[in-house]
Image (spheres, rainbow, N blue to C red):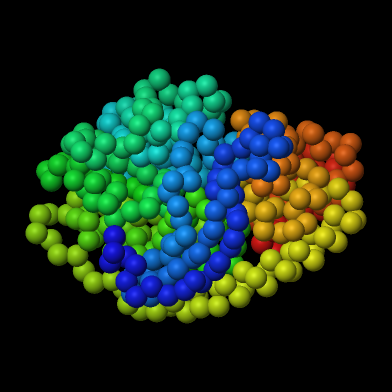
Length: 387
């Protein structure tokens, strides 16, 4: 792991007393306001392009069935998931095969791969809750409430891992463990997906900074990590409005030497990281002013009770004065946000509340949310917080 943090600089960004979990909600407002907190001190390695929270305390982070971060209730996200599932099925001949997922959650995406390709799936996730409602399910999969077993060989045509690696304190060990679990002669592909650090620092996606993400990866870093761990990287690219970074790979032949990291790409990334902290503070002050004015104008709703929404409400002082927090995921309704304590409601709860402004936490969802707001008959301005 040490090589990832070579020549560390920083802190790039410092945030104090932020909620430890953005995606674990609470039964009461009192519990939510008293939720555990920690510090975020983002550091950067110009040698490897790796960004991480130096103040991260793994003792504070214990995943359990109260953790819920599924995005599959959104039509926009459902379309993305279907297209990705179909692409992976065609590219890797996933028909009647076995698929293993690391950190599968409720198994919505694994179920898509099983149903659309007649595959068999096994998911590993210690936070799995069998009683939680699901968008997609399949009788051809099972989810085990355990971590992925790196201590024994696995039999799979695809090892899948979406939005898990950023939570891991030692990502190199996990990737090495995955490689070690795949036999050298196996016809196994891997697909990993993480938030894209280049997007975050380029587009000032400040609300993507959350405590539960120990690591942030750019393309060159992720590729080098896999190649050093014994994989042949087939493709690295961005998807979902460039917010996500994905990598596809196969086990490299024994004795293969990893190529050097892309220095030119790292230089460009370092330029973007420079000044990111100042941009974060400037954006925070700007939204403090804007949100204060909106709250004074009438009821405000934040649409999106996930990591972006929780970060926004906790970083902006006026966040505690926001009247409503909306999410289309029914598993979140009636629960309370860490830090600020608002109860999460479904869209119908806004009817008759006189909401003047609806703040959308992810710009990719503005279109579908504006349609829902109009369908509810609300006379409210819909604003992307990225604007």
